[in-house]
Image 1 (tube, rainbow, N blue to C red):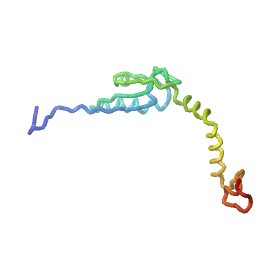
Image 2 (image 1 turned 45 degrees about the vertical axis):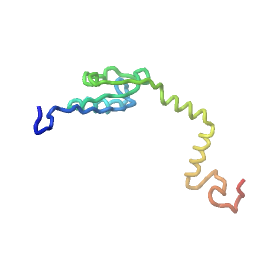
Image 3 (image 1 turned 90 degrees about the vertical axis):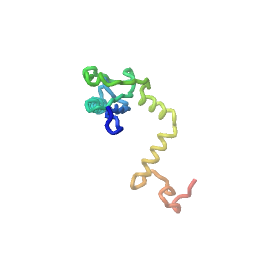
Image 4 (image 1 turned 135 degrees about the vertical axis):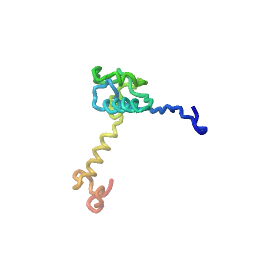
Length: 128
C-alpha cells in the first residue's frame, strides 16, 4: 500500500547485540543483554546476539534461559577463556610486574623507595 508515493509497509529494524556474557552464563553480566534482547523484540526490533560459545563460560545456569531468550537468534563463537589467556600474557612479560611496582611507588605521596633523582632532588644522589 502506498500513500503519496511513500510505502507504508513496516521496515524491519535490525540490531546486533555483542555481549561477552549471555545466558546460559550464570554471571550477573548475562542478565542485561538478555533482557535487552527480549524487550526490544517486543517493540518491533529484530535483535541478533553475538556472544561466546557455551563451553567458554566458567559457570552456567540453564534455568535462566527463558522462551523469550530462546526466540532471539544467537551466534556463538569459540574464543576460549579470555581471562586465562590474559594472565598467561602477563606472566610471559617479566617487565610488567616491575613497571607496575615502579608506578605504585611514583604515585605514593612521600616517594618512599625511590631514588632522590626520581623525586627531583639531584643534589642528594647522582643519577646512575
